[in-house]
Image 1 (cartoon, rainbow, N blue to C red):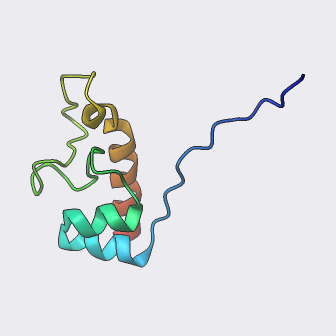
Image 2: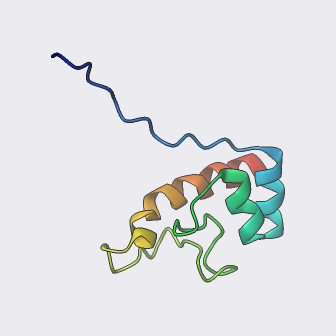
Length: 86
């Protein structure tokens, strides 16, 4: 029986006012909730403010961890949030 091939639906992130406020306040938990991030995903908050945050100039070394695999996503979210805060 033929089956329709489906494309994977990426997780859409909406930059809301709650996300912008949480980013400005450097509130890790509120930002994860506003962006609907999983607990193991890297935070878009810069690493200088949050130990679980990201530093675009310094990617994590271990690529086998889920946290480090979410680096590119966190950098993209950080850029979007920085642009929205201006």
